Amino acid sequence: MIHTIFERYQAREKVSSSRAKTLEKLIKNTIDYILLFIIIVTALQMIGIHVTAILAGAGIIGLAIGFGAQGLVSDVVTGFFLLLEKQVDVDDYITTGNFSGIVEQMGLRTTQIRDFDGTLHFIPNRQIITLSNHSRGNMRALVDISISNEEDPDKMIDIIQTACIEAVKGNLDVVEGPNVVGVEAFDSKEIVIRVLAKTKNGKQWEVERILKKAIANVLTKRVKESN
Image (cartoon, rainbow, N blue to C red; front, side, top):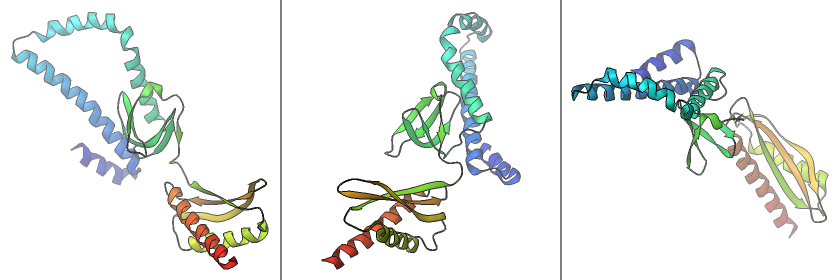
């Protein structure tokens, strides 16, 4: 039912699928806690335990353990503001602390991030002090290519530029470029040439691989011809 409601909400309000998915999972998580509480109370009543007295006592006990629950309260409050300020949504690629990955779920207590090696990190919301969201707007594909310092830099820049343009011709994932920026670094043995392209979000790695392959092919062909 919740899933159907959010599908209609997304279609009617034209919100992003990530935003709708984030709110849907959060509400499901909240309902899980509410249902668990109701089940426990109902089970106690069925076996003859007076829940009213327990709840009254729980209020007194709650005061005693309140200081120990400060972390839990902090998790909930931080999670609320993360959602309110739209800092992150499900399926966003983010970095927080030492963790980077795709957000799979945002709950009342924790945010789940799937690392690129498959590891699922459960991060308490209060530990999300700084957050970098890589899924807002276009991204940048960056490729650095090392060539021998015996090569003519201007000539190699022209060759690499032509190869890159041909490689992504008609590729809708590329928003701008690719452009050879120029010489990024050099030493006594090699020269590093940098290529940049602006891509759609999440497509930067794929475009980088395409550019690397195109450059590798043209450089390999050049070496064979020189031999």
